[in-house]
Length: 185
Image (tube, rainbow, N blue to C red; front, side, top):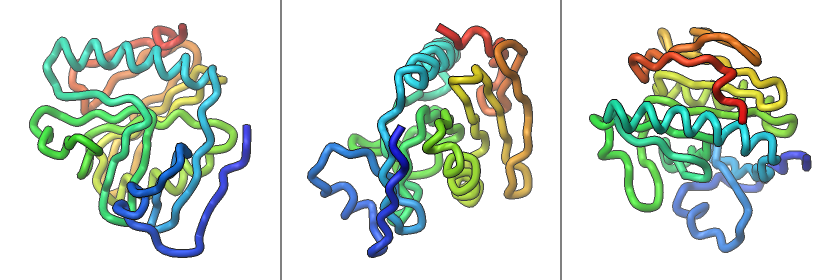
């Protein structure tokens, strides 16, 4: 997988980013435009399994909406991210607009890869905590593992973790309980 390219020449805003005329995947973190590589097939397959599991639960319980990458989440003018999955509760549906989600979702999922893992686990977790995302999940398709982190007093704490097999539950998606083995295709 290609290394992540970081462009730091100027501070970028969402409006400037939105007007880019290429097909690359970018995010803006604290005004810095960052290029993200295209996910590999294992990543996409595993993420598809997780999406299917969550979407079924969210729709059945009428909890809100679930989005699959790429979708822009605009936290503010200098922070736009494209998490792998984004959950917006029904009560917070007003942040969903046609071209992006403008505001703080309740739950974000990042499936880390060798090229994005460091940014996903450090820089993006700090950003998500700063904006009050209640729950973040970090997956690893190669290890078939998932960590669920919940926000407590401005920091993420591990709520649960499993690799290949093991039960997990969500505090944001109340009533959701599943075995991580269900994600695998």
